[in-house]
Length: 312
Image (cartoon, rainbow, N blue to C red; front, side, top):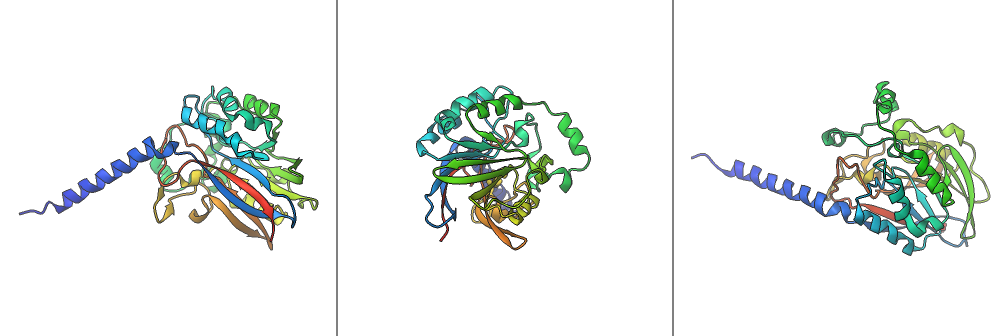
């Protein structure tokens, strides 16, 4: 008599997979949370600064739970808001985003853009993502990358930038800025999205200022940018893009990072060393995902309340 153990095992495995998929779509993708992290990057005796790091909102106007979560973030009372791109996912999302940010727009802020602030997302096979990062054109997309981007539908990037700047927030793609925040002098340098070769670090390169903390802001945390900023003496680097892996295996972690970072650095705060210098990097796991892959598993959507504290 032929054993039925094999078919039963396959059936059980399929049932578990279906349950995990259902949980990721129906529950975890809207299980928004606030992660709290302390970064010791300020001079001894300095007053702490509360930074709200938001990334990868990928907002569609119909996403009521996500919009409600965004509206509530002002209650965290941050001193500064930093957004690291991929804010919207449709041409009609800018008014919804600005309304959902609410009272956060009264707080000082800086921002950079990701590719999904320029172009409407398009369908990609999820399996392609899980087999390895799609990479920037420098890392294997090939010469066709520029042509593929040209075929994308544009998003109202100008309206998005204008709306954020009307709030007093500072646009940092290939720009620098200095802000006084909670009694601290904070210097910023930012770049465009390295995942699609929009970055030009040479435009902002140079030794870090000596009269306050220097913060680097970018969308995709590619090693070339982390190395360059760290070598210049930037003390803290903020990025997003990875979605924390989006699909993680409990006890193992992320399957991919969608950039050239190792999986153990897919999200959170970690040190980075280059040219004999050391910085701290914070990668946000982000609030959203592509509308073509509305799924998270073992990786809830999140923002981070990052407390900048004195160094020991």
